[in-house]
Length: 504
Image (cartoon, rainbow, N blue to C red; front, side, top):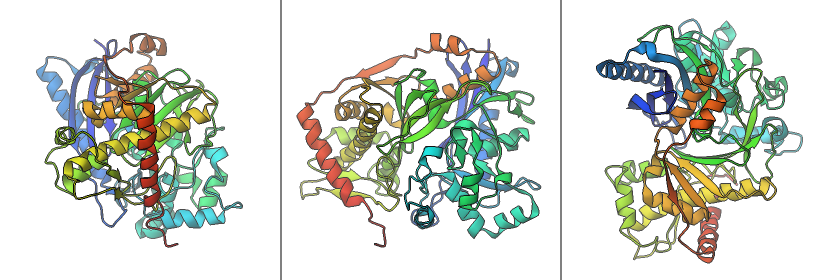
């Protein structure tokens, strides 16, 4: 038996998963929820040590489960990482301790800094560097988070002065803590606003412009090669040989290996990626150009167009934790099913701004269309619809950028896809077939595949041949006219949320 391990460190939880290499069958796993910290409105932080410690515990617990099943750890041939992207960690090389909490991708504290930096560009345009980075200047990306830390956390500046500052996205933090290697992969690097997409190198121009020291940035490796061996624990000596940002890992896990293959993942946020092949396509419709994967240092890079959404499972968490409408996330389906429609209620839950295609960090959550007839079931249904509307806008943008290429099928995964009502809503709203994988750990599987390729125990051809998890199929059940009317109302609601937190 050949087993491939995957560390999946996300915004909501840390997981360790073991897959059978030939079949993709999940053999054992363990998951621990992680905390999000909200010190101020719009601020979202996490404790880097909690991220690391929960990963270590997940590995230990999974190995205990394996032992109880009579499977030895020697069967594990490689480990891959899938991680929440853009979230930025800074730590001291000497102590190995974080210098402050991680700033999470959702955090919008750098909105004013983003405006100041945009004003400094020759064209005063958020897309000034987009031809080089594929990204707009926006609080979402790591460069502004690192800049804020240097400007506002004395310990970070002191570490820089002392030559002990280390920084990176969550993959870099975990790899360094577990192997001692200071590196990131090209997909995570492409989310920083500091990578030259065309040269696959950190850009000295961008580092100078943002006032960031290029010498403290980690080495950039491909998504599938040896990163280093685990230095402790039950898997000591096993090599980390794969690394992908979690959304790129889901792209791989779904087998989106051909141009036009498209997936959407519903985690804390919503992320749609469309494989565009080996040439980067610059979006004219608010999408991001990102690296999809690179399976080996000498292999070509595969690019993707991405729709990044701040609205996803966090809206269900909001109904549970902030409004107390449900006690468990699973209850939202039953509540939403108790009414036929939203009764004209539209909920735009952009708690820290809107991403694709608007890129407005000052947008804030809005509920429109309330009447005395409205109740919590209508709001629950409107919350699910919001995620569907956001996805529809992303899909439309992808097709415009691909010059008429029609995306006939959308592959979906993530926590919300366990809700059949939501899946049907998604198909209705996008007006296309939706297929939902019954494998709940698509991102972990993608990371495991990358690890298998990096360790040369699995080839891309082998993966392509057996990548056929069971699928649930959904087809649209509303008319084009109904779909159009709903989208018009959604866009009116979005307009009311834009620039809400702006000073202007």
